[in-house]
Length: 78
Image 1 (cartoon, one colour):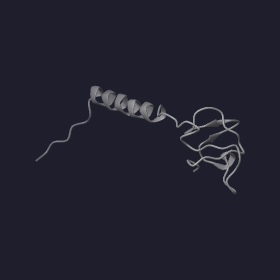
Image 2 (cartoon, helix red, strand yellow):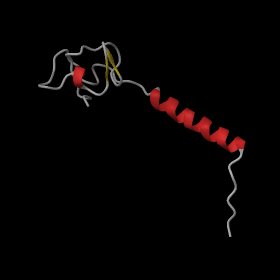
Image 3 (cartoon, helix red, strand yellow):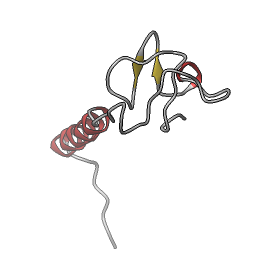
């Protein structure tokens, strides 16, 4: 029969530290250049930076480096 023990304080701290490290790695991912993302300052039909899930008003983007226009668009639109 296998005995199950409550996690130790050290094990919990190691687990929390590992989780924080994974979160920091995910947040610090490199962004694409405007050229690599084929960014342009005009929308693509109804798709524009303003209605993209990566857009951070007034001119930020979670996946493209540098300022972007709300009326812009790139091939990473999502």
